[in-house]
Length: 618
Image (cartoon, rainbow, N blue to C red):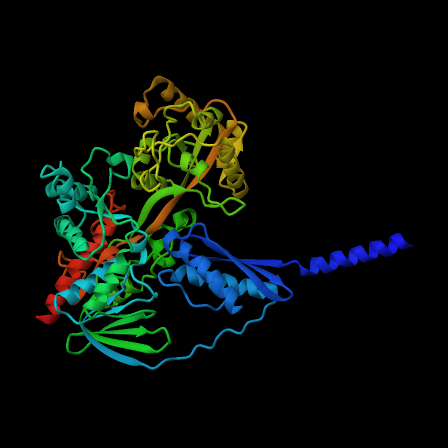
């Protein structure tokens, strides 16, 4: 009887202890780069802890915002917290996921009632819509050239994706002359012809020429505004080794902290948390911009000139499907962004619709984290960044794998295969990557500088150090569980994973092995130095890689003064476009010049400010 009583007491104590343990409730919502998951810990009916994970969010923006939002949700005991400046998309995803998790946990929190603020009217010489990288430079430039400027920004911060950018293209800059003297190795003529040629001469030659000519002045403008900038030690991508270094970097310089000071000193009135909704032509030829403020009141601004710097349409699913096609959109890894409202406003004002492009930039798996929340790095950096055997869904090679030396080029090649492709390596290759006695494992990675990769002498290197095979195999467990990878015992098993005919894949592998052993690729002419890995003895490691679409490009056509054009190439007076809103710098695919995206944003923003101010104050 004593034993029975003792057992009952023990079970009762265990039940009490179990009741004190926290229950967890998780929910997920789509963020800027991928899914964002909010996990709540609940004790005794009260929120006790909040964890937020979003491995695909931009590290400097969404990644930095998540712990702040977790603390605020816990402190408020509510999912309804304010967005973090510069991370509005991630913040919205966190709130949406937290709402679901609170509901699942049975925690009832009333959503704050929306209170409509007062309507307001304002006037300016120049209105800049969108205060990202391009818009911030446009606003400061316009103010410095004598214009009264109002900036409209739907988030609570400056710079947008410019905060995540590493650097900009420029030729003939003061930094290049400091390094090279007057012998740069290339000049404006070379780079104009290079960029224009890459568009197959379908680009906007005047716009490209302006970009190349003015890029050096943008570098000087950056330096004059107290933003540290330096020339990269060498090109970031292997395909560009041997070229004049054109990549001017501001990594970790917090450029928009500096620019905020100039916005203040020049009197630019920035309206944060304000969304521009409508652009209308007034009877006197000026423009009315109708906006929704953070308090849901209406702000109507009258201006003589408008600079549309809204960063294109990556967050507009319909427009992205138009640019990519439905099947590729479903397959590719698409990072969201601006909602396309700016372009729609330009179209309503008479602008012609320019070419819509996507920023194809790399290939990777959708599985982004290990079970403990760490990022998958070893397996995918090797299999997705090394010129090993790549095949499409038919089990056939489709490119010279040397294209991986330029992220944009091989990303576009994969996009042409439907948005994804597969890599195959065998056990011998993995062992080579893990062999510490190898002087060169044969693998390499882009952005060596960003990853801090050094050789034994402390010099920057593009080559991987030997990796831990255990880490590689652990990554493949995650990839296999997600459906993005498999460790196949046979080529037939690999073909089943890919969904292709096993005889076709076997023939591809046999032919490829022959090219490696002969040191000569008769199919796609891969260089002999990269014909390093046969695919002979299982197990075989197969990785499914999705095209990474980092954003969108294009939408309207403009002159070299950034004046927006109609379908008849007529200038719309007082209307300017900048940055990713512009068509004509890249055609068919994102240009593969290092830093061309940020250079376009900053240079067109700066010059639009100059031109709009001249128009508005003449």
